[in-house]
Image 1 (cartoon, rainbow, N blue to C red):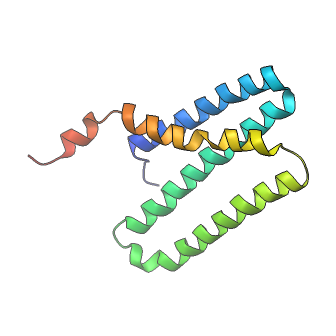
Image 2 (cartoon, helix red, strand yellow):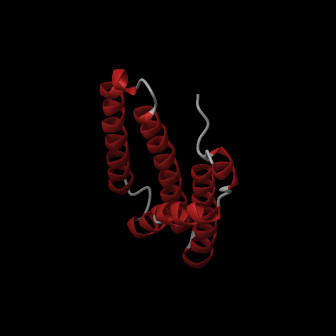
Length: 129
């Protein structure tokens, strides 16, 4: 399996780190269920980013035209698991809605910070001059 882009690796790591930090703060300030809900939201965000990266990588890779239908099904299943899983978590009251959303908010934070601080030297050296 092909390695993830370094910026994407950093983005996923930042999502996880921010999720841990937010979950600790939520658990300290608002209790265990809030901290757990933030941790679940952050975990969903990180796994969603990872799966999307794999699907997009497979679609833009050479020879992807043969597998577009299969990856489209994978994308549909990902959306079903994402929304269906969140709906089940909220319906069964496993998590609280607002802390879950705060945990999921680590996704744009991770993407933004990951694109700013990741090592870009590897990309510059690969560029033709």
